[in-house]
View 1: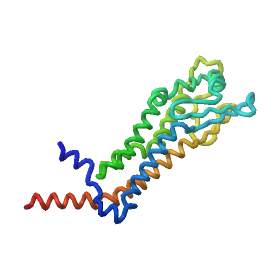
View 2 (view 1 turned 45 degrees about the vertical axis):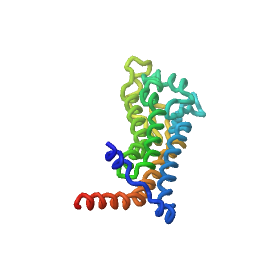
View 3 (view 1 turned 30 degrees about the vertical axis):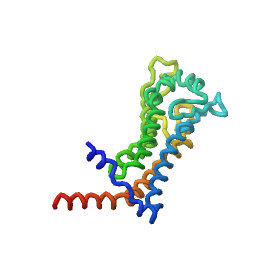
View 4 (view 1 turned 120 degrees about the vertical axis):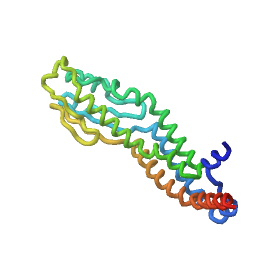
Length: 225
């Protein structure tokens, strides 16, 4: 059991190597730790916004999505969507919003744990966080499509609007309405975390792979004697 734990965590940096080249071993720790911090901070920042321009709302209506909630003119947009048979915004992605904070915290912890794991397992721990912002966009696009393609046929204006796909980014037209969607600071912070993870894993490999190879060579030599 102890051997498996030792193989999972990998070798520790020798004191002599730490004194001779501290930056080599501190760099991956700092970069991966910063990536984890970016992920945690993104919980408190908006991820995505959409503005709806309608004749009766010349200044437009805006809804903003955080990881776990929607804010803005949600009730007003739901009122307009009701007439064309589109479900209320809060009914979409309910599970995703419920688990979002716990998921991001878990990903941040996995990313940070790569600091103490000095083998290839570090990459496997950090990789889930790498794709999180793109999974968010893909899931959002799915729910926008699902909502636009499954209109209630009994709605007052259902006959005047055909099923549609609201764009997850950029501009779109729905009857007399125009939508403009864009990503917010939380999304870009998660993209920054993804870039830091890539850089951190490169630095991690550069720092610890020679130590792993040296340990493996010692074990092979010891087994041969």
